[in-house]
Each structure stands twice: as structure tokens, then as C-alpha cells.
Image (cartoon, rainbow, N blue to C red):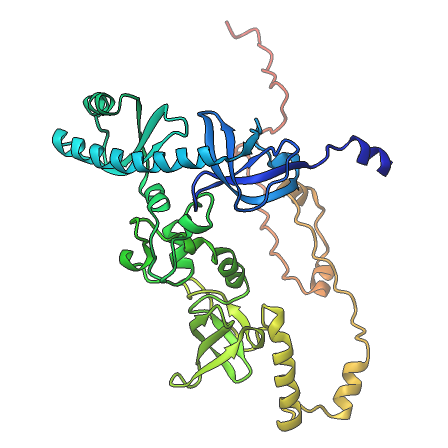
Length: 404
């Protein structure tokens, strides 16, 4: 099965690394069977035609997924005539830059010219500029075309691209990262400066281009990993010397400063592995108080609490002692009679139909005896007969002959 995968899987592609100018982005080109060494000047095939390039790395193989199609070819090594043409183009670029700067000032356009590039075959001149807003440069293109008698292109770029093309020194004293080794610009946000606990002053965290420094991205992943293993500020922790509140967190050294609860004037420095977090972050209004016998949350503080417990057992006397009799009594299993279940609640209908209990039984059960209802004496002849309660129809007496 492994042999089938090896035969069917595509092989790595042989390429060479080419730069159009020193410090610019590196592109892959097909060597077409030839061997090139770093530093060789070559003529390459591009979408704009034949161009001059410098070999940054010799022949090597890369996976096919890293190749951007279509893969252009390296035509040949440069000849003395090609080198002479390149020098003439560099001289034309300087003159074109000066002329374009004058024309921009004459037209009063709000744009800054960055550089000018002349194609290897001299078919066109490309001007790069920066501007805060959209610029109408149609008249400028006409004037430049009448001066150089060739095709003119103007392309607007950003301030970071300008720094990459011009180059310079950063606040660290080294050349710009974008102009030396960075191929692409990575997104940088102000959140990275907050995560790394840097000053949010724009002059300190911004580069020469006016944007956030690219180097903020370099250590962001490391800081995120350290934050996961460190307690938050204002957390309540357990230390070998007692409990306290985290005052300051040192991410790189993995240490914290803790203000002791019993003695607030004392601030101790402890490693993250020697503390246990009892409450993460600042306390809220609805948070209940932390009990004194609360076990630590993090596993790093279990060893600390065990050592403190062992010290208490060896140094402090036992607070609770039991006699032998109490221990024996506690050891015996309890033989309590099961409690009688409470009688179920009966409905009012069932209570009415329940026959009355005898007075002797009620007395034995300890229940209060209900008083019997008083019986009324029989009524005299003039008293009314009792009302019939049957649900049947009442019969009327038969009529006599005297009644009409």
C-alpha cells in the first residue's frame, strides 16, 4: 500500500528563488533544467515580458502546494549587453523620477512620488506614489508621455509598501524588517500591544511608516501561551506564606507579586508553580466570601497545601481529642427503628365516609375526643314534621268529594 502511495503522489517541484530588486519579495521560477547559484543575474519571463532578476537561492525542491501557477521560467543568464541595458535603465529611472516630481508640483497634485521603474526592454515606465485621497492624474500622464515617448503607468501604494521600497532604519537601529526579510505584511492590532503590556503611546509602538510596528507580531503567540499559565491581576491566591492578592504579574519570568492578606504591608514574590489560584481576577459584588478551608483550584498549589498541612500536624497540637468510650460508641452501628411513614392526606369525601372511631380508641391514641352533638327533644303535635330529604317526587293527598 505504501509503494502505491509513493508512486501515485506528485513529486516535489524544482525551483529557484528570484528577486527583481534587492530586498524585495522572492518569487519561484522554473530553472528549466539549468543550474543557478545565489547571486547570479538572470533574465526571467514575467507577465510584463522579459525582466532582469537576481538569484536569491539556487536549485531546490518544494511541495507542489507551495507553487503559484503558472510557474514562469528563467530564460538565461545575463550577457554583457544585458548588464549594459540594466545600467541605462537605472539612469533613465533617476531622470524620470525628477521629471515626474516637477510635473506633480506644476499640476498641484496632492501625491508623493515613491519611485520609478523602467522595464527591461524600455517599453514602459511605472511610477509608484502615495496619496491620502483619490487623485486625478490624467493630465500628468499625458505630459509624461510627451516627454519620454513611451507608455506611462501610475500606481498608488500604501505607506507600508513605501517603507518597504525606500528602506531605512527603525527605532531599534536595524534596517526595516519589511525591506530586509519580510515577504508579506502581517496584520498588527493594538490588542497585541496590550497583551504584551507595552505603552499605548503611538510614537513608541509605531514605525517610520506611521503604522504599528511589524515586530509586535513576532512574540504575540509566546505571550498568549504565557498568559494561559499565569494568574490574572487582583486574583486571590494561596502561597506558602499564606493567602493574598496578586499585585503584579511578570509574564516572561513567570512570577507574581502577592500582597498578603494578614499583613497588607508585606509583598512577596513567588513563582507561578508555587501558588494556587482561589479566585481568578478581581472580586465582584455578588461573589461569596472565600472560606478558610477552601482547597486550591489549580493543581500547582496542592503540594504547597500538603506541606503546610504536614507542618501543622507536626508543630501544632491536635485540637479535637476523643475518649475511648466516645470512639467505641461512634464505632457501633446505629440501630434506630425506622420511622413510621406519615399518613397520606385524605380527601374531604373519604373523611366523611370514614366510620367514626370509638371513644376508647381515640383516647388510647391520644387524640382529643370530639364532643357529641346534642339531641333535640321530640317536638309536640303542633310542631312541623321533619322535611323529607329523599330525592323522589312528593305525592299530593287525594282530593275528597267536598272539594270542588
